[in-house]
Length: 109
Length: 109
DNA sequence: TCCATGCTTCAACTATTGATGAAATGTTGA
DNA sequence: TCAACATTTCATCAATAGTTGAAGCATGGA
Image (cartoon, rainbow over all chains, first blue to last red; front, side, top):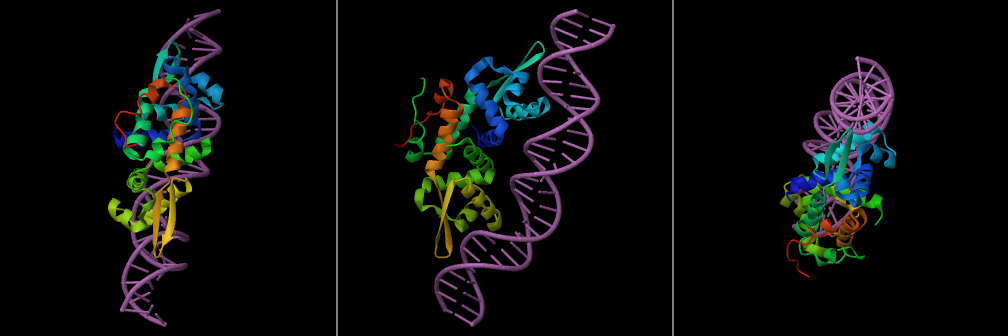
């Protein structure tokens, strides 16, 4: 992943509401969640949410699809993995102290 | 690491010059580099650099120490690891597709 | 067709961020 | 002490980001 794309992703995630959106969507996988449900869950206005969703989508972290009158958003896990990978491997290449930090708890594999 | 701290770190890294600073400092470890050398390497003005360094330091991603008339900055690897760990484990908990993305190349251990 | 729903877009405004260059601070060496 | 150096701070300005509420646009059901 190119650095400019990573920068966009970092900007996108560097906001309270938007990081919450990502946290909400990741575990739902491709099923995602429609905009209205996200707004309700996070307690934000529809138009405000729409703004943040488009930031995330432009950064490539979310995908969207229409389903009847709903718009379903889902996290793009590969993109998220790409950002994390960049931070770990390109940005912090070879720093064992950092790699050592990243697996503090058991993960589903 | 708490989310508010992660947000600060993401904001700090979400800037061209600042991400370059991190990339420059990580491989140097605790030796770090003085402000002047960083400015010269990256081709930015002293005052501009000072601004960005303080953003990174406030986010906890850098440490600084004075050595005679120089100020030496070094990456805080634990903090960086903490951010990456948060993204991987808290933000994207359990998403195997993401974990699977993060080890595309061999790392020094 | 008409209305309600779900979402986005727009306009206006405020707040934050970043760039620039000059001035200030502190340190070293002559 | 004085001058040069390393860095930060400050003031100013431009650009960007975020919030809010109203208006717009599809879609689906009565």
